[in-house]
Amino acid sequence: MNGKRIWAWFIFALGAAYFLLPLIATFEFSLKMRRGAYTWDAYLVVFADPRFQATFTYSLVIALFTIVAGILIIVPAAYLVRLRFQKLRPVVEFVTLLPLIIPPIILVFSYIRMYNTSSLLPFTGSAFGTDLLLTFAYVTLSLPFMYRAVDTGLRTIDVATLTEAATSLGASQFTILARVILPNILVAVLSGAFLTFAIVMGEFVVASLLNRPAFGPYLQLIGANRAYEPAALAIIAFIITWGAMGMIQLLARFAPKTAIRTD
Amino acid sequence: MAEEFLRIDRLVKTFDGNTVVRNVDLAFNEGEFVSLLGPSGCGKTTILRMIAGFERPSAGRILVQGRDITGQPANQRKIGMVFQAYALFPNMNVAGNIGFGLKVAGTPREEARARIAEMLKLIGLSGLEKRFPFELSGGQQQRVALARALAPRPRMLLLDEPLSALDAKIRVALREQIRAIQRELGITTVFVTHDQEEALSISDRIVVLNAGKVEQFGSPFDVYNKPASRFVATFVGTLNTLTATVADPAARTVAIDGQVVTIPALPATARSGEAVALTMRPEAVSLAADTPRDIVLDGTVSEVSFLGSVIRLKLDLGTNAIHLDTFNDQRTPPPAFNQKVKVTIASSDVLVLEQ
Image (cartoon, rainbow over all chains, first blue to last red; front, side, top):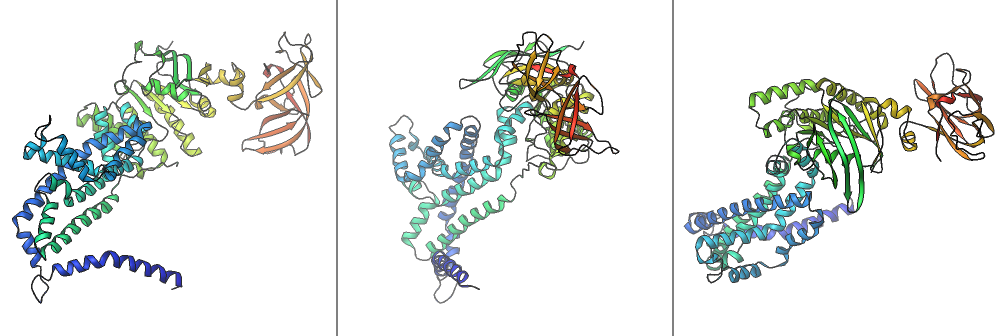
């Protein structure tokens, strides 16, 4: 092994240690609930907590609605930008990046100002209305990731020609989107969906300020009041996120293949 | 007399102030195979896309069987189209692709299945219905695209440079197959190409386009042998152009690099000393030893290209050079480089083009 290689491995090990050590330490700590032995007690306590089940289910449902709403808004929008409004691309890309620039706290305060009980659209007046508002906020927060994922998917297919081919065969715009475009970018859409899922499951600021029983505020609540359970929850949250990332990697293998062959 | 099927009436298309199709008038007969031929940017694809409904004409009308379809949406025109990049749906297998139009039209499943089988037989790909596009060769993909376009029984077929992405051998085989299928079905077909050999070999008629205007509309024989303009003469096929000086307008004589010959086609308006362009196809020129004709010129062989059955020679006449094609003859080797030869041309094969 030459010197350069050793350095490369050394830097890799350093980087890996930077990321892995806190995780290993947290994991180790989460197992130490019972004095003098490694046990899954902290995890069992967490799983048995009805608040864990309630908040996890709540966030899961909100994540699913966020994903569906995101797909319904972003797929047609990205498709039309690619097909008809190429000139608008820079503007749309800028807009989709705004949620990365504007902190969620600004977003949620604006929502509360705009949609409070004395406004024209009093979303915060009911639990259902607030749930809707939370979903909208999450659609906005996941916009940069969802749009980019969908746009990358659209880049891999010849959107214009496939659209024209389907049109010449009598298909309507809706049929083209549902039967031709969406199935061909499904892997990209699902990648965006898993990213959205990971974001929603751990989000704290918006859920907390809208006072919804989501998983993020629950994590914070346990973290402030307990010793071992927060470590267990942190590991669970990591597993969720990594699981979502793993699914993205796995799905990439199933992307429809295209081949312009000349033979 | 075949019935008129498609009429293009004073069609104009302007993109951002740039007119790419200028007042085009055309009428195609039912069952006819017409090629739109021209260089890049001549407007041929734009005309095709207007027929398909993908572009809206800036002015003019498109009529199919007397009915104005100019404003009709593309998905209601019942016009099949094949694209250069195949454009098969990557998520569907061969049967799914061919059956797409049938599914959209709500064709009953059994009927659709039978039609897909019929189409696969027509393109010679029976047994490959379960394959996905990426598992097929380019030629097979394009045949599937053709079957997909034909499956819903369109009233007309449009082919947008369907052979351009293919290798030379596949291109020739597929164009013959396309023509055979078109003849079998009797479907009116418009074929866009920039390849004159392709257009000449499979079309009933050819529309030669240049800068958005129709230069000539006629049979391959007429377009090749009786070009209507200098553009057509130079764009379609190889053409020899010799610069000559009018010697005696009354006697219809000109001098080609000092060699005086009689050209009956010389216009009466030509003036002595004026430069004229004489054009002829390479096959209209032969070596004097082969066929004696009325014009005989002295030249020197400057290039010998062996093309298989044909040998193409380039001869220097002085300032002019002339190409000639001669059949390969196993018993007689072609003239050698730098060899002095006599070439002969029938004056009736010479066209005089305006300078």
